[in-house]
Structures are given as C-alpha cells and as structure tokens.
Amino acid sequence: MAVVFQKPKSLTNAPMHYCPGCTHGIIHRLVAECLDELGVEGKAVGVAPVGCAVMAYDYFSCDMIQSPHGRAPAIATGVKRAVPGSVVFTYQGDGDLAAIGTAETVHAATRGENITVVFVNNAIYGMTGGQMAPTSLPNQITQTTPYGRDVNTAGYPIRVCELLSTLDGTAYAERVTVDCVKNVLKAKKALKKAFQTQIDGLGFSIVEFISTCPTNWSLTPNEALGWLRENMLPYYPLGVYKDKTAVSQPPVKEETK
Amino acid sequence: MEKIMAQRVLMKGNEALAEAAIQAGCRHFFGYPITPQTELAAYMSKRMPKIGGTYLQAESEIAAINMVQGAAAAGVRAMTSSSSPGISLKTEGISYMCGSDLPALIINVQRGGPGLGGIQPSQADYWQATKAPGHGDLHILVFAPSSVQEMVDLVGKAFDLADTYRMPAMILADGLLGQMMEPVVLEDKPLKDLPKKEWAACGHNFERKNHIINSLYLKAWQLDELVQKRFERYKTIEEKEPMCEKFLCDDADFITVAYGATARIAKAAVKEARARGIKAGLLRPVTVWPFPKKELAEAARTAKAFLCVEMSMGQMVDDVRLAIECKKPVRFFGHTGGVIPTPAEVLDEILKMTEGAE
Picture 1 (cartoon, chains in turn green, cyan):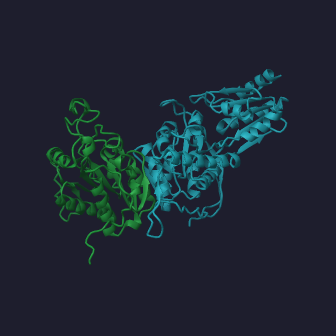
Picture 2 (cartoon, chains in turn blue, green):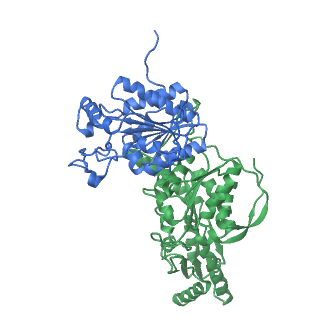
Picture 3 (cartoon, chains in turn green, cyan):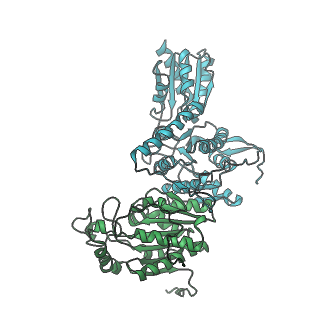
C-alpha cells in the first residue's frame, strides 16, 4: 500500500511539549516537510529561540543551535558566513524577534543575509506566562496589560512583514496562518518558497505565521482560532509583502519632484 | 594556502592583533566600532576580503558576539574585538558560549570606566574579565600581553587553548598597547592544520547524528553535573596553563606585581630600584585567568613585601593577596580613568614598601 502520510524525516521522535491547540506543532511539521522535500536536512542548521520554541532543538533532526533571546538572526549570520553552503533557518516568536531581537532581525534583513526566518506571531509571551508582546493587539488583555493594551502608554503593535518589506535586503516576506487546512497548505507553499529563496542565494526570507496561544489567551483551541480570525487577521493581513523571485516586479516609481 | 613572509615590521598594536589572528587561521571577524580598538576592525576589513575571509560590521556588540557564537558553533575560528563598554554588551554572548562549550577569541582593548568612562588606557576591566565575564558559574581564558610582540604571540596561543578546552579566550589589552607602535616579528610559518571540530553544527550530511549546541538544561541535577564537569576542566587549566614572567625575582625582597602595559612601567621602576641597591623584582602575570598562584606563593616564601600596580583602583591586588594567603604585606598603587602611572611614582612606592616592611 502506498504511504500517503507520514512523519517528516526532519522531525525527531521526541514528544513535543506544546500546549493543546498551540500551532507550533503544525509549523514545526511544515518546516520539516520543507527540509525533506527540498532535500536539505543534511545541510540545514536550525537556530532555536528563547520562548516556547526554545526546545525546538529536540524536535528537528538537522543540526541545531540554541540562541540567546532575540539573537537568532545574528547566530544564523555567523553560521551562514562560516558555512556558506548550509541552509540556515531561525525559528522565533514575537517577543524574541520583534522586541528584544528587533535590531538583529532588521539588520539581518537589510544585509540581505541569506537565511530563512520562521516567525511565529501569537501576540503574547507564551513561555513566561502571557505578558504583552510587541505584537499584542490594542486593548488586548495580557498579564502585563490587565486593563487591555493601552496604545497611549504601551504603544502600537509592530507589523513585521510590512516593516521588513521596505528593506532592500529582504528577498521574500509573506504572512500566513495555519487556522485551517487550506491555509496550512498555503503556509507550506510560502515556507518552501522562502527556503528556495535562500537556496537560490537571493537574500533574506521570512514567513510570519499568525498563530494562537489558547493557554495564555484563556480560550479553548477552537475559540482561539476564532479569536485569531476575528482580531488578528484584520490587523495582520495575510499575503506576500515582498517577493524578489516574482517574474514581474512592480514597476519602480519614477522619482517625482 | 597563503604564504606568510617572515618580517620584522613596525606595527600598531591593534593591527598586530588582527594580523596575528589571521595567521592563527581566523577567517571570521565580527565587530562594532569603538575607540581605542578601531584600527583592529579597520585592518580586518582590509585584509579579510583579500584572503577569502569574512569581515562583518555588526549592528551592535551584542550582535557581533552572537555572530561569533554562530560561526564558532559551525566550527570555524571566529573572533570579535571591542573596548570596555562594548565588552559589557558582549557578556551575554560570552556566557552562552561558556555554557555551550564554544571556543572563540574576544579582544578587549581596555579604556577608562565605568559608564562611557574615557578613551584613554585603563585596566579597570580586570574584575569583569577574570571574575564575571558573563552570568553564571564560568571562566574564560584571559591573556594579558605587555608588548606588541607578545600580543602577536598570545593571539595564536589563545585560539589554540580555546580550541583545546572548548571555551572562549580573551586578550585583555589596553588602549596603550593597542595604540602603540613597536617592531614585531611575524614568523614565516605555514598555516597549521586547525583542530577538527567534531562537535560542530554545520550540517550533518546524513553522515552522523545531528549536533545540538545548547546551554539550556531544565533538569537541575543535569545542569549541576555539567557545570561540575566544566569546573573539572577549569581545575586542569589552573594547574597547567598559568603563565607569568619573573624579572629579578629570585633574590628579591620587594616584589612588584603588574600586568600588561603597567608591567613595563613597573619594570623600569624595578631596574631603578636595583640601581639604588634595593633588592626589587617584578612578577608579571601573563595569564590573569588562570592566575599564576603557585609562582606568587613561591615568591612569598622569600620576599618581604609585595606591591601591586594597576591602571585601576586595585582589582588584581586581591588575587595577589589570595595567592600568597596574606602571608606578606601587599601594597597597592594605581591610577585610573586613563592616567598612566609613571616609573618615578612606582619607584616611590617601592621605596615606601622598603620602609614599611623593615
């Protein structure tokens, strides 16, 4: 009988520690499927963040490095410069990538560092127990915004793909979600394209996954997906924000006076 | 393989450090501009592209040390350089590298502190380098050269020992050494084969088990065990690797202890004291971690008193007291903030020591 579905080879057998309903598991699987299908597990070096995915080094079967909080793009830069033929990816949450590691993210992108960033945005700090993230929505209640995120004092959420797409070094940026089968398939396509961008040496690639945190959102897994659709997707529209691989680039605007 | 010409050249300390690193097989430099080490980075930016190496100006010292960490994890000889305020930023990465058993070279061309301090030479980062180069139970190898030639020699040694013991090494220089020009011999030696790093995370190519470079251990007993094991290694280093120079110490009654640029000033004072009939000597730690405890303890058997001279408020002086178990009086003299002690001042202190001890 033909095998139609199996665990990707790039995933280990370690049981994942993620909470029920958390989307990390799906995203891990997509990363592993991409590594498998592109045949690059042997060349791959993954960089795990600080946050819920800190133990990603136990789940991927390629070589892995655990990074200080927010520094994954710098670690990845070091690896890529040391082993140019490697396929290097970071796996980072919103606090890691868009708060403590903003500088490392922006500068890896603007250098056109030939790495792939898997960005998991669930609008909250998961591992430390649900504090406000740089991507928490206005009025979102978290442990450290108990009255809701007040934009007058806590500022506004960061839209990472939009921000990075302005940089010339960013070759590919897409925002996806994994709330349903259709979107999971779309997300995988985006991720594969991001890795291909790196393999082709085109520069920095990032895929932002709009994700859930049922535990810290205090919702059931299903409710969390609903909350994601109702609240996060309007603020973080899905789509391709940068694609240097596209055959027809949008015309460069003539400079006007 | 690149042929390096044997030559005696006049070189600035910072540039000599850079060339020595290249000679030692380093092809990956990540840095961030800061006075007074900038010539080192500038030299690297000129040389690295010509020899197929990487020079990368990072967005911060934090990013630079983490790039070093990534490159080191991937198995190459990597380095960064900075000066005091920048080293503070690197302490995060240094701690992670200690926890992940990664070798790399960090150069600190010290300047005055605390805070932004000043840009003149200083030795006020001794505590940081030898006691707490990052959070957690850890040590790094710390070399304290006192001439441009010695900087060249110690860079290679630092890389080698970092690889041997799988830990970061630091060259603890200062603005004086970094900025001064001295003749230096760059040996005509072929680039040696660098040690193979079987543990590196550089892609397993389906030829081995995957490698994980990590410093996280959530099981307390496991972390305890690992750190205990690492400290066994530190103990070996403390036994085998301390280096020091002894100048006229054999019959000395009054021993001055100084390292780095300050040791040269102290040496002039010791010579002058000898000319005046005082049995003075100089003990110069070349490694400040591991600290040359045995040599000091030995010297304390016959010496009457010690004088510690530093370009700080007195940071090494406690290590001297501990090494000799407070068996003899230990005086301190120093300037900080970029003020360089003069030989006359040190001589004066040696004279005071002779009075105090007799």
